[in-house]
View 1 (cartoon, rainbow over the protein chains, first blue to last red):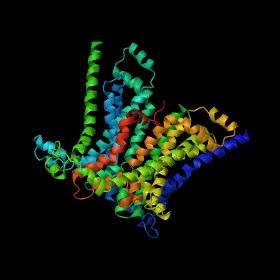
View 2: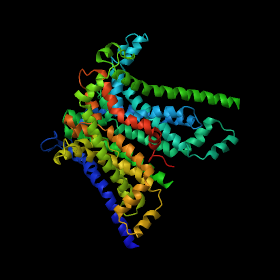
View 3: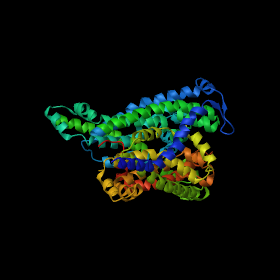
View 4: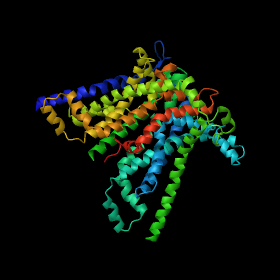
Length: 294
Length: 279
């Protein structure tokens, strides 16, 4: 018995070694080393110079940092709607809906095209001299050029939030929630029908509690997307602008690190971002473990 | 009963409208890219929204030959192809260990993998650049392949782990009695048995790599090495690039994923929930 266990441990580590080797070198080391580099002045070449907490002092005075936090706040405020929209649609579709298959193909399409392509197409379509302005002018809108939603701070961040948090996730969300709802025991609804409940009560008292895990998980995924997966679309859609109107922490790290070559200072931004991501990761891990026990 | 039916019609109608609006937001951009790509640049300036009067394929010829999109396409196929082989082996091996074997440290390692996969590419990009240059892998496809597999394998491993944990352990027990080593068990039993999941694993991985931007931008700085996605991202910033040419480049970039999607759409959309829904 003991040798068998030993053998199993040996086998396990052999199988894990390629994954662990790659992740230690290319993920763990870079993530952890940010803590050291955040205390240095460093341009990416030559030796980093230790400067203590100077970078953090600069950071807490940096306008871009506060804009990034505020923008992340706006994006996070869209998450409830980003979860609720597919949830409500899925609830209607649950009872069967003619034409859903066609809509599913279309709504999932953004995931196939990817953020870089979507950002590029939308930046063309919504540009001041793009087809949308053209269409509006033809429809008789005066000064349609002035609408230019990507060109103004408030509308730029809200457009980005709508596109990224709600629209891009609706297709996946519907498929995801439908699949979760399909595993709900049908007899629950039958029993409720005898009690004479309406659709709304069924939704609140049966559907929502039954797929609570999926809703929580989908919400956590939305947080991950907002804090850690937005670079591609920001780069192509707005480039962080106008001004700093669509900066996030992630985009700030890029601009400071690769446009300004202040690698040490960028590491300080990375460390702040690390704590946000670590918090989200811990919530996700707790959820996964809870899901496994059920 | 009647009241119930009326209500049902109303909710269905509202759902239909919402679904149509959301769909329109994707249909229009794709339609716009298609009609623009076959307009001559001069025609686009005066006719942005209408159908092309004199359809032409010049833009496609231009992006494929003069703008190296053909080269970018070859690069993308090579990069994604080789990465997929490595990614597949790493994910199935680790998924096997996490999902089927019991040993000390397994849970810690699994938690580490779940934790480390969340960080945005930008948080690690700076140091990745330094590492890759020190290894002498800057401007090589090998460098990007290693980084891609490292970054995307944790999620793939998670998918395979959830799958393997549902498979009866007796299968490997009997192989072990036959004296098969762990690598043999992986190739003879675990990989063949995972067939239903492998398609999903590969599609999720390949799409993620096809869309990847920051790492390719850092590691592949020479024009000749670029991927399609990187080509588009950098093209967009070019001053004075005609929209029809950009539209043609976009269609070249999404052509292959789109083709796969049209063929396997059922499989891809349903597979996308793998690893995130509990049965």
